[in-house]
Image (cartoon, rainbow, N blue to C red; front, side):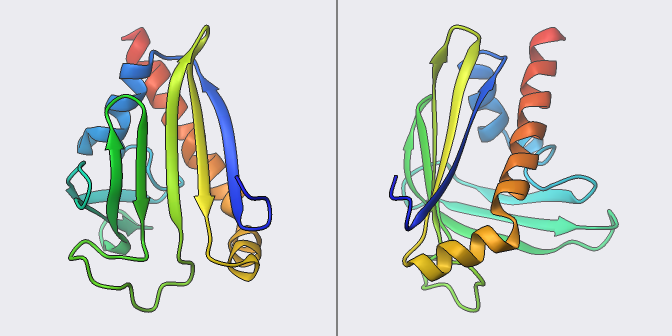
Length: 158
């Protein structure tokens, strides 16, 4: 991680790695945590393979869903890593009118208490990193990571 270009977060999720992976890779589960509550998410496409589409929509009122993320997976290593970018959209075209171009790497590994969950969001220059930080990357990604943890942990107790 380059502190001049990247932002990150780490969290221990008290659920098995396979459960956290499932929360990431099952569209119905991803919809439950991917955007900060009380907003709602709809997964349009989740094609978990290199070059596959990652498209979501967002609703603040539960009725009208607007574009949220149109991205492309760069790497998917089962039970270990997911990498996606919004610099290329789901049709492999260069992104247009995106406030923050980024590449996100999510890594998961076993931990004695569950899953070690790490996110690194890479930016092209220090200005983009600073802008993303100012817009609340830590709060937004922190919030959804908390929601992911709550979902995964509840899946274990069911």
